Length: 113
Ligand SMILES: [Zn+2]
Image (cartoon, rainbow, N blue to C red; front, side, top):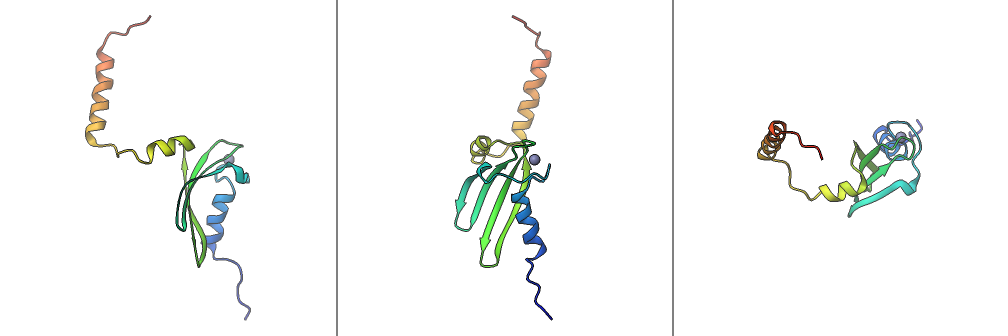
């Protein structure tokens, strides 16, 4: 019996994810991928589709077994990722504070200049 030389399904799928836009299926231009962080064999990348303007965050893992990746559709621009990646997580107090801020604005008389 001949060995199956095709890469495993998950590797094909993960490479497809970083080669084609998952939204409109357009092939990415390699120049649209920007590396956010390189940590050994882990590479975090931001890829923006030129056609539909959707972006994905892709974590690409290289190992002796091959290359795999995980992708996440995002509305963050490359600069946003840099800005928010080190930000503290939102707390319950943050959410309540924002809600109170909105309510206070609602109650205040609207001023137009
Ligand atoms: Zn697209």
